[in-house]
Image (cartoon, rainbow, N blue to C red; front, side, top):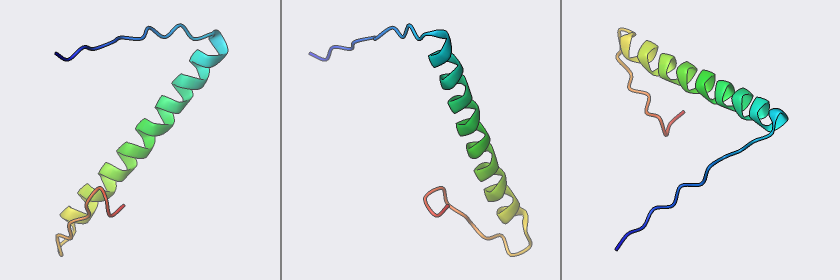
Length: 54
């Protein structure tokens, strides 16, 4: 039988700000990498850039 545990985060105000900043940074990085892959594929040579290659 599998059991799942949910841990409730109760960050302090400072920790919540740090988590939000980290999430924003990761989102920006992922979006930039996705755009790079889209641009490479739209290029006339249609080069495929994989997630692992980046």
